[in-house]
Image 1 (cartoon, helix red, strand yellow):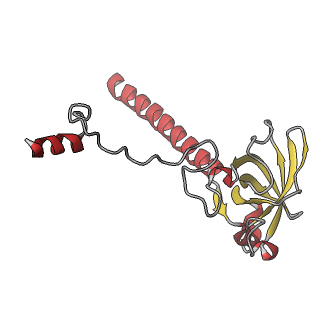
Image 2 (cartoon, rainbow, N blue to C red):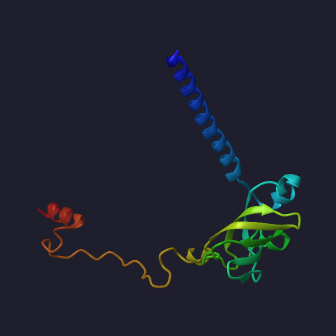
Image 3 (cartoon, rainbow, N blue to C red):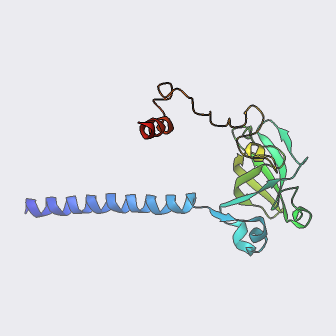
Length: 181
């Protein structure tokens, strides 16, 4: 009788532990889940937008950044400011209140990703902010990659030497000297 009562106690303990782990996993998954939406999609979400953890990406509107320590208010546009579509792009006011200041790459026209919730006041309240650097590392329009400032154009190949022993290490010299023998 003591064997079966011990088995029942162990079974109940295992069921409680497995149930607790399952409950923690389910509630943790729901709490950390966030939906990625564009600025245009955010407007069409309806009531769901106010109750979901969201991630919104856009381009920082030039001259819209107002920073006070770690508190930043700015406007996201769905298009870059130099794009012809920028004037018709949907705008979203974002208020970031984080524990850390925004990244150094967070500047006018940078691509930013804000994670948080959309308020009934029409402002996106972000608790996480990420920024990609503006396209300062892309080659200038019309230029060739690798020929920017600080780089020199490629040098033409040296002409073969008349001395076969001087060029013994190069494949062209080896073939040339082999054909003359």
